Amino acid sequence: MSMELTQADFEALARFRFAIRQYLAFAEQGAKAVGLTSQQYQALLAIKAQAYSGAMTVGELAKRLLLRPHSAAELIDRLAAIDVIVREPALQDRRVVNIRLTSRGEALLAQLSERNLRELRAISPAFEKLLGRVAGLVEP
Image 1 (cartoon, helix red, strand yellow):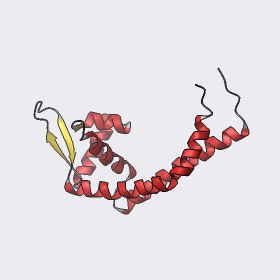
Image 2: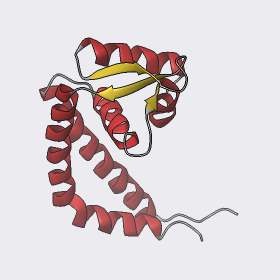
Image 3: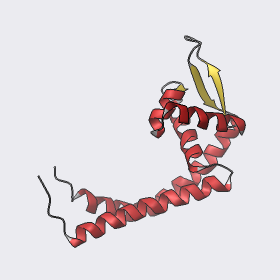
């Protein structure tokens, strides 16, 4: 079933996408300021989030970042080289490698996440309004 979109609908979609891009650019600039790429920050965030429900593995990180396993492994190599993560063999299965943040990784992640959360709080009223508009375009 096709929807008939209006000019206002296209404008709402464009404004919503622009707002997302603005936030992502803000987060990318913050990561760059501390010597990380946006993808590296995303990896640290995924590793930290996973730590509460179990260990992060290369395969799980690949899934979380929508990467191929070999690309995730290369990303992990780069993160280990700058001392923000370490690899540890899993206790139950030594073939599995778990990934965890170092104290440096924890500190960088906290610094960037606090900055990003402040920005999200600042833009959330406008973002919620845009999201409400876009959500109204979706058929139930």
